[in-house]
Image 1 (cartoon, rainbow, N blue to C red):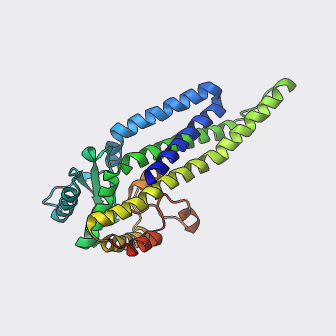
Image 2 (cartoon, rainbow, N blue to C red; image 1 turned 90 degrees about the horizontal axis):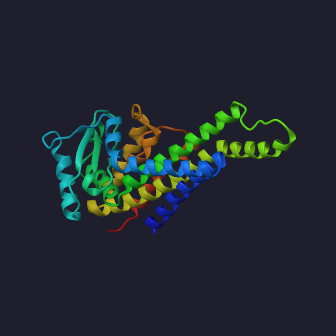
Image 3 (cartoon, helix red, strand yellow; image 1 turned 60 degrees about the vertical axis):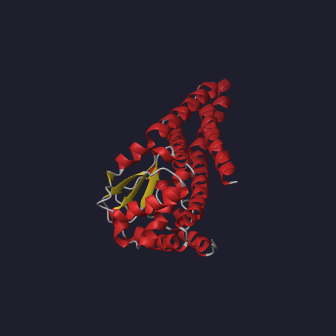
Length: 286
């Protein structure tokens, strides 16, 4: 059911991009928007992992540096018969982790130095099992594509805003006033509603995949308690030590949202409420 829901939401996001393109430029605009969607999918498929790792200056993690990470990942990967991912670390005291890569064979899992400092072995295993669940279910590719398409929609919305600001839609003569008025309304709707619609669809995709990764991760780890405890620690630590230079475009990749926000913005977070995630985990019976 989650796979079907995610597919429908991705289709809706792509359709929204093409629809906005048609409103801004007719059939030619729709074709251009479709080409943008194809280009986004191509870049996301082949280069998303390299882009994200470079963005956070992730360095390869050797087994000598973190034997507990290799031990946990190797145990989970062997048990579930998935390839051993490449492991990286990010030098920051903010505890967090993320996975990226287009497939299980091309996956990478990154942990922060802060994560290794505060997690018990059971909690660390739960976090890594969560990230390996994303790898196994190809969530990393799905959510990266969703974020890229949403970003393209935001870009078109900004173009519409600039067009309105610069006087787009004006025309001379009564014969063109009706057409200009319709164009003005369309641009106004794009500028206001398109970013909201894109954000809501992306949020729905990400939240669906996060709940699924929590469930699968608990089963891979053999217990939900380590992941539940880890999420509680990570939630508090994200408030105390926000991740420096966190990019909203990649926030969905992390196990907990690295961005700090007020209660209102939390309603539009790409992550489900941590309290609800913990409640579901605590209620699990394996």
